[in-house]
Length: 300
Image (cartoon, rainbow, N blue to C red; front, top):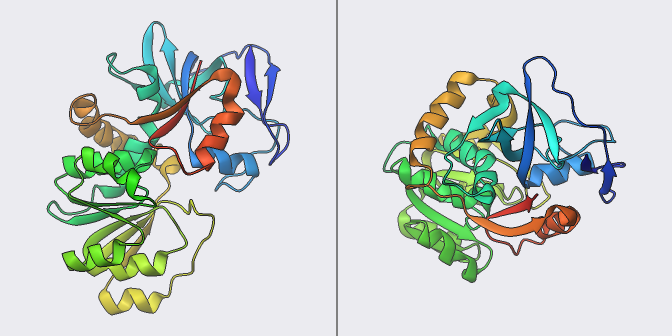
C-alpha cells in the first residue's frame, strides 16, 4: 500500500510502500478517495501542533472514502495520506452521496469548527470572519448565515472578497480597511480569530460583552492578551480546539443534526486547488502560500 510518510520533522514527505492496515476491534478499513489538508497538518509535520507525534507517521487528519460501498468522512489524528487506513467506527461521519469526493473532503473539519465555534452567538449579532476566502472562512460565512448571524468577512486582498460575498456575507473588507468597516457598524458581537498576531486589534472591534473565539494563529505569531482589556468592556476570549470536542458525542450529533440536512443545499464546501496523490508535497506548499481559495484537497 502506498502512503506518504513524515520520516523527520520539518522534512519533505516520502512516498513509501507500507503494509496493508489491519482493522482492530471497533475499526473498519476506509478506502481513501480524497484528503482535505489543514494548517494543523502542517503544524503536525513541524512538531508544532497542540499534540506531538513522533516520526515516522503518515499525516492527514481529514480523509474521505468508502466503507462497504458507502462514502464516509473520517476525522483522524493522522494517517489519511494513504491508499487505505484503519478507522474507528465512531470516527466515521456519513455524507450525502451527491457531494463529490473533493467537496466531501472539504466538509468535516471546517464546518464542524464553524458550527461549534459560533453556536453560542445570539441570532442577529454581527460576527467578524477572518481569512474569509479560506477553507474555514468560507464554511464560517455559510454557517453563520444559517445560524441567523450577520457577517463581516475580511481577507488580505480585495480580489478574495468576491468569494465570501457570493456565499452571503453582509459586508466585506480587506484587513487594511477593516477598522473603518467595523466602526461603521458600531462594533461586532463576535470575532472568529484565526490570524493570531492582531488579537489586540480584534479585541478593539468587539462591542461590550462581545466574544473572541480563538481558533488559531495562522500567521505564525501568538500575541499576548492584556486581561485589563477584557475587564473594561466585559469581553470574553474563548479558545477553540476541535479534536477533544469530537469525543463529546452529544455535541457532535448536535452539530451534524444542524449541518447534514443543509449540506448540498444552503451549505456547500468550497474546494480550491486539487492535487493528485502523487503531488501531496506540492499540495502542502499551496496550503502555505496564502494565495488559494477554499480547501486544498489531495485526490486519490
